[in-house]
Length: 262
Image (cartoon, rainbow, N blue to C red; front, top):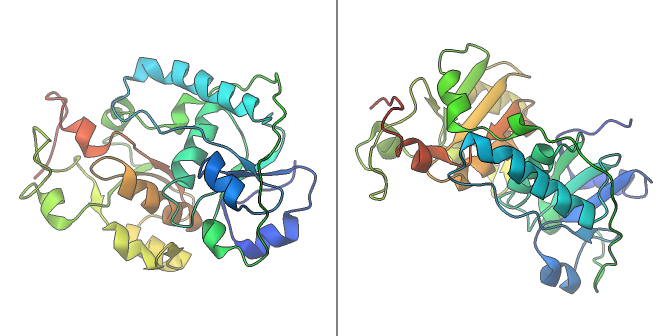
């Protein structure tokens, strides 16, 4: 199998776009894809992670995502590169869902379509459904049960990317029944991970902020999973085995039996 970094840039894509085993997925939606897309890409909408998922529901959800991949001709044998408008907020959740379904090689295009220097193509794409079965990987999507079980696990770094007032519990979202943060979580506000819109800081700078070595397991969370999806892009680019916890504090705060710190 050809290697595939978890995050690639436009220079890498330009050099690899003609490779037979490369599939480029546009997660913006079929209408946006038809209006203009990176040549050779297909529209690939997988949906959103389950925001309040019970652990038992993850397996069924993974199989549904696998079905969506097959409808788009994705077998799992290819290198799958996903892109969005450029901020990573669409591509990161889509990549995590593809991993949940069991796809072994998924990457995110840094800068998305906005960072592509070449010409764009227009028009719809013809999809070729396949029947290949993927083996779901439930561990690709962190659940509150996993995070709670691993609070004292030194192999896992939990990163809270919210503002200080949210982290401290002084001023959280009014829809949350409890305020504070997951015990042991380190606060690294999402904006500090980026040098500019959609442009992560250097791997060394990100690792200095997080305080964990390259290759470490990291779970990021915010209030409802959007900011932490963006943070996951920078964390993966820095060499972490990073996952976004989509339920985030919105879910955690609803389970009275789960601990918190203020």
